[in-house]
Image (cartoon, rainbow, N blue to C red):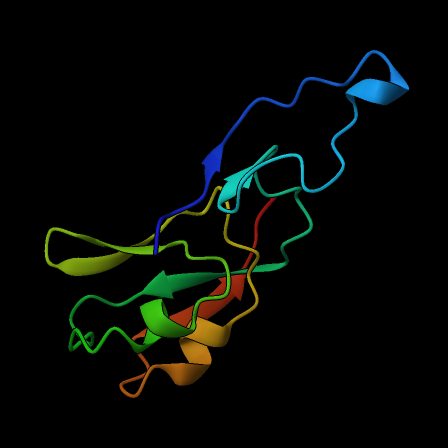
Length: 99
């Protein structure tokens, strides 16, 4: 699974310029996390066993491998907590998002 990436959205100038289907291919987002996340996942690298359940279940595809441990792209993480719930070693915990 590819991680999301930003792609510039250019507003059509005329009604005929609007796309008939999706404006972008899957995996492209026009803005980062919109700021509504209330909690964010934090990984405890010492507890992580590398089972990758979090990666498999992440609906946003923002979990990736960095220096042999998991890492999270917070620019696109929605804070749903699925990664923390599926972790068999409770290596991921949710903390309150600070504004």
